[in-house]
Length: 580
Image 1 (cartoon, rainbow, N blue to C red):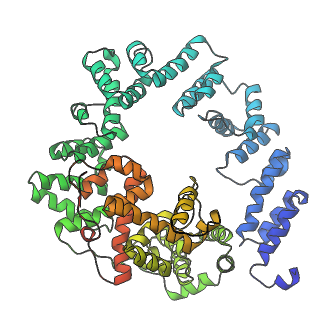
Image 2 (image 1 turned 180 degrees about the horizontal axis):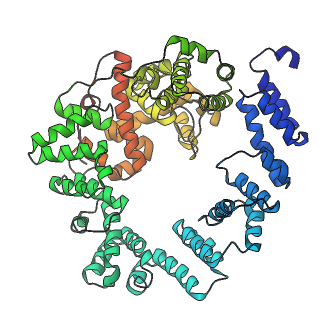
Image 3 (image 1 turned 45 degrees about the horizontal axis):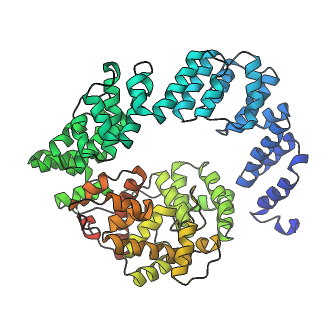
């Protein structure tokens, strides 16, 4: 079989598979020669890392260092440093790197134990280093680790760790009795009490039960948490001049946007760092607030600037100005000669053949390996090739990475159009909405699995999939059902249609698809609210960005499918109805 494959571009994949089976018996030197002999294969390049793990576990230090290349992998870096310490090749920079690994706020893999033991023997783990790791552990909420680290140290360190534990479990007691001694945990304690009992915290602040030395820190924690919870009582706290805090800085603005207190919105934006104020989002809200207080002339310049962006805020700004959207590609594609040249590269051919064989995980790995070796113009050519092969995920990703950000044919391909059209017709949903949501969920990868366990094109959780399949009378074959594009789309669109029927607005339904209907029920406004205001005050950053991304993508897909511009205020009603 090997001889019959020898002229195939996939021959190196066969070599990789065969080599992997006997990796333990191949020397580091021979493996390096193999990698040099087949430089176009991600699968063969990956053998380096597999071999390194074997060498590290076996303490073959010289071979490990011979084969090692720079990586972010913690285990391999522990093996590398252990080898250097053992062979007495360590330097000051190695000591610093080892201390960074040791001082991490979470427990490191057992693969690092031998390195840490050597560091202990060499006296590198000083009291100062141990204290630094204790603080890092507490910041990561690793109380058990912090207590273990504090064991060899004096009583004052243990008291510090216990104070942190009290700030989390009994925040009121901490704020009254301990905050002055341990001011670092005051913000956290106040934030936790604000979550449980904001009225009690406000009373402690008002009655000056919290020591004056940490009073502002307590107000900071209270203000931040109450702002995120959109607590009406937070307004006076948010108007106080408090220490800068990135979360508070943003939520001070969002809070006043939610309550449509426009002069306060402008004041809150003015407190953002200058580089933050320049971002599209805050430019938009500055202009929006200026409009609402009657300063239309001042608002126009900001709206015009933001409207140049084909994004959520760009489309909102264009709608305010009555300007047409401009979705024409302005970035220049590379010449056909360069596209042909990239198409003939062996590493590109391997990626295409793997994709055509349905070996999608291997294909994506090979593609990422390839694009890391290409120039920006070659990456643009690769994006065009992926689009021609209907490899939608690589077309979209590579176009964005290479700078073809406004080439919507490449970045927003009409993927899985047939099953999406069927689903759109069955549930009377906009095809453009389904495409935008699918793009945001999976970037057209039918076999992808999220860290939470969601699967497929529309990222359906197995529990939801099983229940929905039962409602649709579909045969449930476990996770395979959700990896199948047609059934995944059918299940996902049915669930989305249920959310639209329940909430009546695509923004609410989109948020429910991402965060769950129970949360969206909590977030619904008491009274009718502008769409942009409601979206800006969604408490979850992921869901807020998701809704913006999906609805902006819907505008682009309306143009991709129908060849005409449809405004954002047409695809999503500009008002969110209040609770009935």
